[in-house]
Each structure stands twice: as C-alpha cells, then as structure tokens.
Image (cartoon, rainbow, N blue to C red):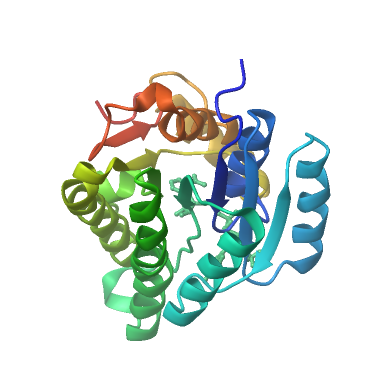
Length: 248
Ligand code: NAP
C-alpha cells in the first residue's frame, strides 16, 4: 500500500544518510520529493534520478538550511515547482563534538544554527503555505541525545532538545489549522559514516541496545512515512524515539 500518493514532501539534508533514506522511502510510497543538500552536488543529482525511477516528481536544491533568507527562497521555489507542500522533514544536521572544557564558541554557535535555527527557518517559511492549504505535517529530526544528554555533545544535545520544545510549541499553535508537528528521536543509526568506525567499538554499542542491533535508515524513514501520512492524523506534538529500546 502506498501511503503518500499525491503528496509533496520536502526533506532537508538528503544527499546521504538518514535524509536520503527518508527521500527514497517517501518516493516508494508515491510522494513527490523535493530535497536539499549543502555541498554534495553530484550526490544530489544522483539521488534526483534514483527518486524519479519511482515514477514521482523529484528535485534537489542546493540550499543552506541554516540561512533564513535561503530557506524562504527554497520554500517559494518548491511551491513554484511542485504546487504545494504537504510534508516537511527537517533533517539537516551536524555534530561538532567536544568536552565543554574544549568546546569553542564557534562550534557551539555553528551546531545551534545548523541543527536548531534551520528548523525555525524552514518551519516559519512553510507555515504560510500550510496555513493556506489548511493541511500539513512537519517532522523534525531530533535525537535520543536531545532527550537524555550525552557527555561530549553539549552543543548537539542542546540543539536537539531545543527542537523538541520548538516542535511541541508549533503543534499547539497550528493544530487548529490541521497542521501537525512531531519530532523523531533516532538512537544509534548505522550509515556510511558509522561504517568507517572501529568494528569492536560499534559492536559494543550494538550489544548495549535492547534489540541488539544498530538502527537502519529505513527504521527512521518508516516512522516518517507514518507521521507524514494520514495514518497519523490524530498525532501531533509528540517526540517518538526510534532507538531499539535504548530509552524506555
Ligand atoms: P549525515 O550523514 O552527516 O548527513 C547530513 C545531511 O545534512 C547531508 O545531506 C548534508 O549535506 C546535510 N546538511 C548539513 N548541513 C546542512 C545545511 N546547513 N543545509 C542543508 N543541508 C545540510 O547525517 P545523518 O547521520 O544522516 O543524520 C541526519 C539527521 O539525523 C541529523 O539531524 C542528525 O543529527 C540526526 N540523527 C542521526 C543519528 C545517527 O545515528 N546517524 C542519530 C540521531 C539523530 P552535504 O552533502 O552538503 O554535507
């Protein structure tokens, strides 16, 4: 069953990893997909072609989610290209890990700007469109680290916890207009990035997870399909963990 037939979705930061997994899963479910990346032009072009193979409209945009004016331009361009925006997945994110003692002001600011302010930028721009449509589902990718904190990631944890507060507030503001807003908090998800890590270390992480494995990009994407679809029509203001039971 295709759950997103006829819907148009925007996914930020989809040139690789979780964002790419969400884009592909959305196309498989019949959604027209717009996506962004910051620097990976070649990967963007390749993904656009992969998505079109599902028989949907697809377009990649090089756009910095952390920049307020670029986000506004992106949303206007997407409306011109796709006609409407039913689903937004705010996925673009970075890590700049260090202990607080060694964390620079720049790495704190950069992390907050890319991970948290980007969610404000895109959501603010898209709300006008969704208000006119009286329809929309906004999905913000947080992290278990935003829920429980993590040593060496104070900047990242603050940005991801901020996303949860933002999500709940937007859900309260826009619920009466049939616009939903939820957060997704992935645990340890295995991507190209984690494939280069020491196998023994990674196995240790897997062993500590109740389901005894790292998550896949599909595990996160499946929840996003559900939250983007009308199957979740009565769910808003929630933060749902996809973490194999790491948090209970
Ligand atoms: P990733 O592989 O590093 O991919 C990040 C994506 O974001 C790339 O496509 C990158 O594009 C894009 N991006 C970065 N800064 C951007 C900006 N300013 N504007 C637009 N796009 C930008 O990351 P991931 O592991 O898939 O993570 C995706 C999201 O899930 C992040 O928000 C992350 O915090 C969250 N998360 C991940 C895990 C995990 O275990 N992997 C766990 C919890 C939460 P470029 O090609 O241009 O660099």
